[in-house]
Image (cartoon, rainbow, N blue to C red; front, side, top):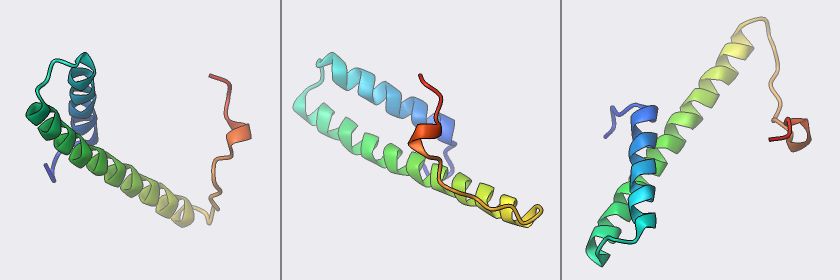
Length: 78
């Protein structure tokens, strides 16, 4: 799973959630799916953190730009 792409991991995680929401799994199947989902969730979070660090590094290297957190009030309405 270590070499898995973010998109693939997210797709698998979405499939696990869909299957669990259907409620047709046994307890053992649910526990196994939950365990796999936690691993995939952690992988996705790690990949997003790595991407965030890369963006920060690139912004610092390219012209000394500074970064700041994305404020909630700056987001466009959904």
